[in-house]
Length: 178
Length: 178
Image (cartoon, rainbow over all chains, first blue to last red; front, side, top):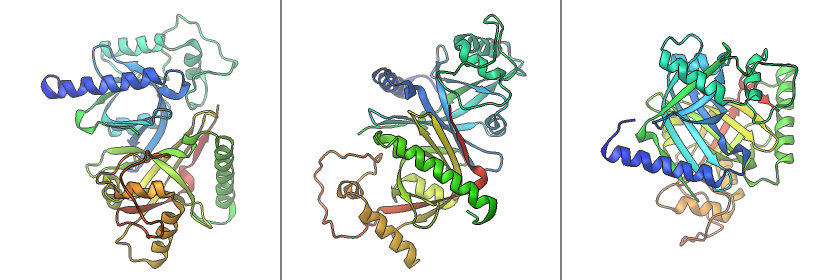
């Protein structure tokens, strides 16, 4: 997102509104869930629920953890654009944010990006990390049931762990409220 | 959706699962809200919250009321495919349904389709209908605040009232649960 002038002010405004929505809905576990739309390899839209993992330090970029074995990685690698629809069910606020998605997986060579991936890995709960050991990727959940997987907490990102960095574009932003 | 054989069985299974999710989440007002992804005129994904208005009689088609003045109508008229992501926040169930979208607006000539549009209009609450009088389309809400608009309950669909008929395709269906 371009910095400076009106754009920066608008971005700050958006961040402030989103921060307020997250704060006032913090008692709802699903308030960090939103829907990410992409374009699939056949050109049709794809849409799924993902979990907000915070903002990238010093930017408005939105972090999303995912499994590199899911179909969306192939889709995003082919077409980098997405639109987030983030609906807060109690306050009836909707944020629509379109932008470009950067995929950081085990094959990414950029050292700074790998460092970011590592940080996101260690910022996840041990239970969250366990899902990357599973044979088949599933819907991310906030609380996992106990399963027969174990993982050394000091071990870095598994190969299947993928970080998406969603870079918002100012002109796609909308927010609505009752 | 093709009828008969395995496809019909799978469709019934999906309908049964969705009906069960709707039933068990009926105490949540937002359980009828889902996110509809389409492809915008610039080829990028678009994503917004819409409200489930029931199934079309005798089919698995999903009905959605919308305003013909919204950008999504232009998008859908250009590219007819969409993907629904319907996430039930308490039961943690996700339904992803892709399909083709039929737009029925005031210019549609097919009499049976106009009849369907009329039925959807009268099936809406008077408060819901009032939003089509507004100068600018807004996010649909379940309960409207009182406003300075009045409408004769016997009047048929306003020009801005548009019905979307979402025709699910079997192979795009997914459902996941914790």
